[in-house]
Length: 176
Image 1 (cartoon, helix red, strand yellow):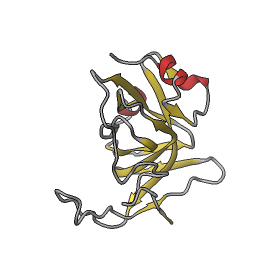
Image 2: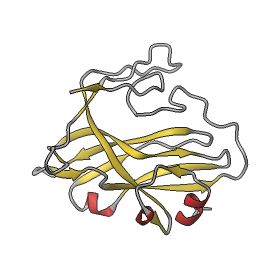
Image 3: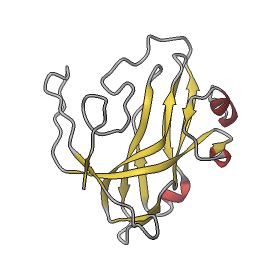
Image 4: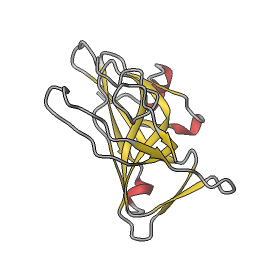
């Protein structure tokens, strides 16, 4: 069963909301905090022995317009909102229709039951003319579904992360 936006807000599954307009019938809108680009390769393996996250550098918003221009390519987006997912739920992030209508996609993984912390996603600009985003722009919607039973819950390295870059859950970004 999908939780309504009202239920998500009432249960405080999503925190650090910017305003009441983020609540939607089937979820909650996620807003732009920061955009980063990668500056190194990552290493992924089976048991995380050799796992190393790619380094990322945050891009700056224009001081006057509070906007940022993204050219075709892939970027890491950090959302303002954080989550505290119950052990009876899981979350999914979907792009808002205004993004894909503009030639931009958002991709994110499953948000496991028991996860607490920052939210982020991959944003891919396919529009050959690029995209201008403003700080706090509504980019995606998070939707929660109830599981058929309570599970142990997430216990990985990103628990309590404050950003979506880095390996240790601290989410350290270098400033550009």
